[in-house]
Image (cartoon, rainbow, N blue to C red; front, side, top):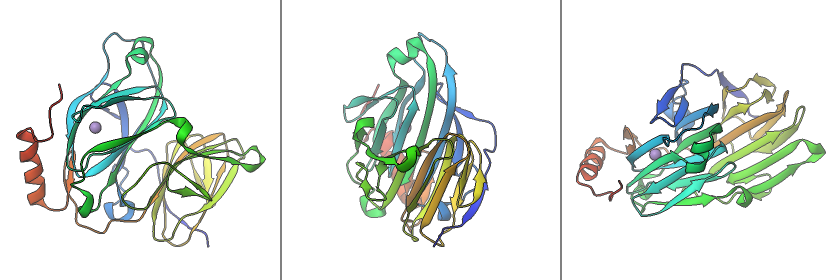
Length: 289
Ligand code: MN
């Protein structure tokens, strides 16, 4: 049974800067999708391709906290360097994904990678926030650095394209990301007229972002930068590219727990939020220059 399309959301307003390195459109919840319909996803910022010129100044966002959820950074084009209060650092290159579990609390900073900054070039990124269930919100902070070559790879028949399975299961192929609740995250690249079909449990909330190109999803048209929410009325999803397309598909078991959030802190109650802010002010998330 096919899932119907609940709504195709156009890209809405103007972009905003995150620090001076990310020029993003906020799609979750910015387009108007409700928390209930998109759970376990909390936020999606999309930096469509933009050419950053060469710069001696390294653009990005300085030390800031996160607590109670996960940040997933998907680098389509360009490179991002990150440092965090656990003492770790790394580079997210084009095709890589960083899956960071903020859990009990972390400070980190996210900057254009030094060499990329110097040379400049096309930059295209997504950051997706995934909620954690109450029982896992205090898990120690850590991250999974998932390189492009580690993704589950599915070559679609008839030269239709390729699917990078970041998390969950696409047809019979699993992705490398370890998740706390059932989540699928697929980077789907389709050639013009390419097509693919897959099943997602009916209980999952499901949506997609058209990163590039134009598609039809279960018979409805979605254009470049549109965000599509699917109904929970079936399992089967068919995506057809009317132009060469890149699609970010996400689905997950909703987390039916109360949400209290304040900026980069996402907990279950207001008391927990006040405690999180206090802990941050006291320096309990560690130190980062
Ligand atoms: Mn961050």
